[in-house]
Image 1 (cartoon, helix red, strand yellow):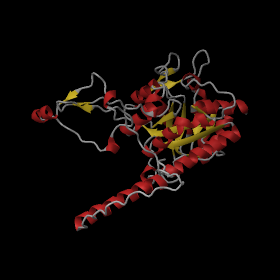
Image 2: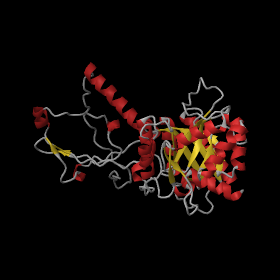
Image 3: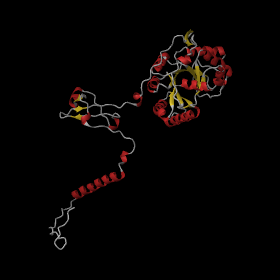
Image 4: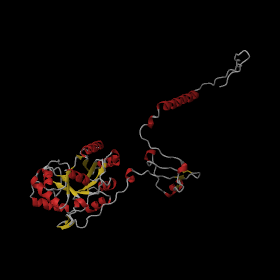
Length: 398
């Protein structure tokens, strides 16, 4: 701090008077600049005091350091591109990759760019080893319409051979998800096979074209597979289940013939599940021979959406057929929030019962939400499991 000079008496000397300055003449232009400056200062002070309102919420941070551009980045001349008729795409800042390094414009006006996209959660997941290609030796016999599953000479069953291997982790409840209705829609089926975790069990429609190719692709990605059996619903006019539907009123011989036609459509599935079937499940007379036939062929049965104490489930128990039922249909309402709620319900059930099993359809929203949920479910203390593992664990506790 500069202090004033002091005389011998201790009093500050007065500075000499300064000549009066002439104030600049105020014009409209000067006033406008002054007003803009006041607004600018006010905005700056507001941001410092109250924060930047646009900063709320998640934001993407992009590295724009020219020095970080790769030395071997492609050199692109806008002039050359225009002359050669190259396609040029303009991106908004919100459309840029999630993470990357962006280059610089050099002295010659050429843009040097190096872009590195951050791996997605799916891409960062380690690839699951493929399951053996079906059919495995000794587990099929020739039927009138194609190969049929059988129990091997050594007693090994298709339910054991084609299930995805699973090692339970101590203290972690297991949760399984089945995605069904696959094989008709190529895009949805490909998405389920390639994007969902290998622990998710995939269920295929028997009428699908190239069914065996789809099963092979699924198993190559580590997914175990179920085959859907169309069963008679209460309203056949509203729910078309196809020409090989198992009927509550049909004689046993007819239903067994249809069952064998369905089973011979492909191989490599560890078990079957129902498609529709609310009426069929009420008939013990119709259910009993079908459940016995499945047991003799070494398969498992998982029911979905028809209740857990039906005549069908009782006959499965009587036939000593490995079976269980889905605890929740996760996409009864095809809304993201509703699906999330059902997935949380599965977590609660798993805590209570050591395991939980959910089933859904290959809707885009279902696969999207299941994929998101599966990315971090194990960090919350659960273990994602194939459906066969939950079935076997429940059978062991009976």
